Image 1 (cartoon, rainbow, N blue to C red):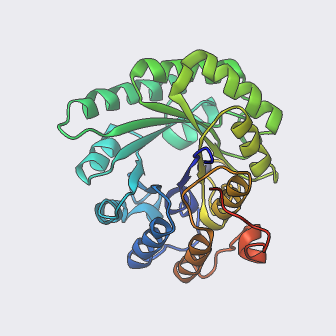
Image 2: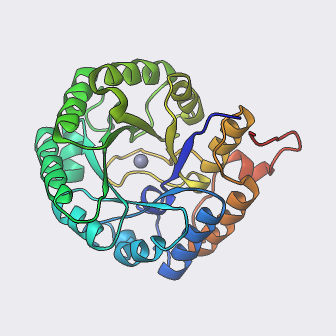
Image 3: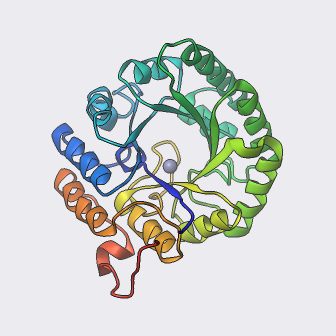
Length: 306
Ligand code: ZN
């Protein structure tokens, strides 16, 4: 039996936040349900941010309340601060993802705080959520861990400082995010090793963008380093409104194709996943859909992992 890899769909959050149009809520709900029906077990469905900042996320409360009824799906919601985490909890999210920019410039433009201040906010979120009757997972995403379009090089020492601060704050897990897509495979290896040496098994996930076309190469480097959880977006949607030049996430369909072909079981059915692209196109008619599988179809040579 193949080893299992968790592919977390972040299209409804990361993918939509820089879309030119706003996806109508009923179509978004149908799209999320189609992704779940394809076997995706973790979906980041939205972000609890003020609608005036990211209007595409204004329906997040409603979307979360609907998504928690999908069978076998862990519903993730992004929350940049305690207020957002409280809203995520109130609406029933299963896991809260808190972004913490490692680079000062991105942290300021995205969160209006220094990285150290945001680590402090994470500690407040952990303290509050742990007091609530319903258990909620808490994940911190180390944004711009591999480079920043504002500050340029992000020193590994800065990533380690943020990661150890977040581990001390008591999060359940950490991810390393290549927010602007500047990483290369050797860098993935080095940083995963260094962060793991600092925080051990708390480092669980990679969040990769395909700006330079290295997204899947970077995912493979992560696989070879033992990472077994990846974020990805259907049709490679995505970007960051506060990171100029960022392009889409790695394409979920193509990542699943690579993993399954290599013998890593994802539990995801490619044909159903590809079918979910048409709902995305219906909801965002002007948006470019990317990805090899969507363009070429499933190769006749393809065999899913056992
Ligand atoms: Zn992203």
